[in-house]
Image (cartoon, rainbow, N blue to C red; front, side, top):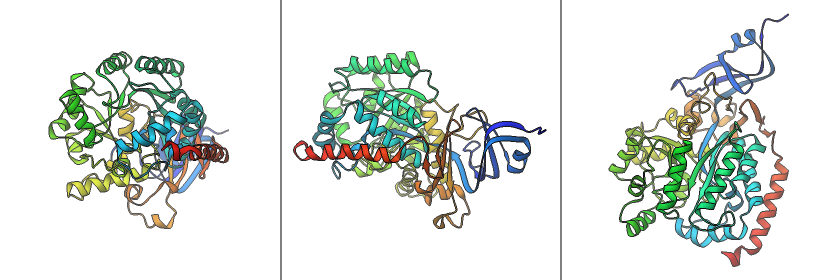
Length: 446
């Protein structure tokens, strides 16, 4: 009779990169998982003697990392991928995206688009995403059906859409949704006012009241373009961040998305109030918004995570690309090759994102007692050979195509590159139906 302890899963790997402690790479280690939680991390030889798993994964050529966290996206906009490219932000929004949304976005659109996004993200090693879009209940349903972890945005805008009639209606529907799903272990909720130019002072006041009562993050586009700052100066006489400060929204619960155009005072303010930033380098470049001042923000100690933005402005939900671009842009902008080294960028894509969402105690690092949110990357490919430093390869050489396995809360969502919870053919069929419908009217619409 075996004296080994029974557990659900044992994953053996060539390398484990836990993120905590920093800069540590464990060689020939295993992760023991039971009831969705990391029970132990120990040498493979010791694990095989100590545990009797129901299922063992032997990944001899792989690195295990915490699941990647996409700190900012509009998941359903996968259905608008490539619809209106090569345009500046305000023209892109006003003349193309908002008209298309008015015509097509409904609960089914968001469900289909978000499921498509979940499939893309899982295949790319992403285990958690922070969403901001209409019909957030459809987003919650899509995330739940896929098995992903998600922070659902309770979106608020001061104009009517098919989803809600006014700011109070947006808030009421968001709060009702939060109440419905508050005991779901994989879902959390953020208030998601779209931007300073679409939300009034009164609405911000209501959001702040609720956010403080519920200790919930506030997720907002901020200082994305020079146009946004100009509009703020003309309408209120202050830059957007100063307006947000005056309204009392600067706090550890603020997730400020983009933050491209900042002065030294604003950088210090973000540190002073312990705010977080969702850095989206691909979207910032594609929309010609500019280059976020990441090196001075890092030097100030501001918590920075990474996001893809939506597939309509990126056009991919690829956190490996965001890691590589974040590192390279920081070096180019600072003139220092040692700015934002690989291990720091990997932390931005994992634990920093979790901390921004208030989830750092349950995910974001491979730590005993945390949820088993794990991504495996196969290093047997020629373009990852030879490997002197797996962390360097993850940021500078690997791509999402090298992701082989993904677990969330101990449940396998991707096994040998095959989705286990979503039907790829069905997703493709539904996306094609939306494409044909939108393309049939897009010329007159756009």
